[in-house]
Image (tube, rainbow over all chains, first blue to last red):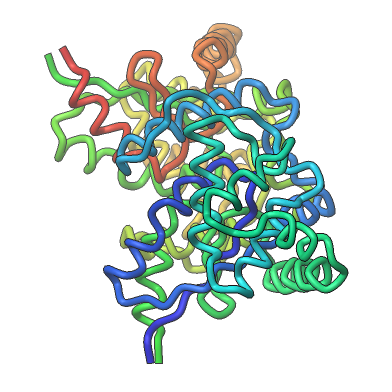
Length: 199
Length: 199
């Protein structure tokens, strides 16, 4: 059986940019089967009073500089510090749930992060979700309606609950069963663990 | 000129265990000149309301598990989750300032972290500072008196101020001039940067 890794992430997490853009190549090179699992880390962080950046200008300045350097190491664009915060209604994330169900989640998530980091089109702000969907050749209106449905909201909440029960508190988190690896800089550790512990 | 790296750290930071134990070997292998610079990250974190673990049991549980795994990767002991918090009066850190002045800071800091992580002797608690100093063949009473002096307190505060002005907010931080790298997992990035940017 191929080793499996669950990629729990939230569109709106800044470091998640790095993972979204590179995880498919890393997983493929390692023969790992990947499951993209968008969830509401915002809900969990609020529950846990885990507020790493808000009202912390010194740490926030470092975070952007660090992402800029790490992006350069990964060969990823970082033309400027992108706008923040994003996705006030978590629409961009709920669309990711729809995309998971329909099998185009990686493409959608990458397009969303590229729009944000390369073109400063903030996820879930204005009509940016619709623009990304249209760019992917999707029926934006129909997808957004689906993302607003009780069914998709319920699935999003259920995935958040799975994450909560696993002890996930941040994005990105890579889970191999109950073993958690938090942060883009733990992706290689997670891959290694998955390979060592696959059946 | 050899590339230089400033190692800003605080005895009491948990992830700093990894850096304290491995940084000399990593720096030596890379031809980097290292300056050990103990400072009060606690003061800065309180100023910035940066409280990553207190009252955050889920994140704290992950932190220990992550350190355990990273220690294993580095070949470092991690027999159990050590006691926490430590060094209520920052005596262990002020002794590190004395040790810096006298040229035995790395040995002292490693011995302090070994006592904490291997033998659960919490830094700055009870007579643990004295025990570590005695184990190093030092006159514990004289060193502690020096660490309590206005001069050493002043130097400790001055180093904290240097860190504050650089924009340092956590331990360990590796600084190459004004370029900051935070966290044990950024040590290799810092080393690489130092080599690329040395005169």
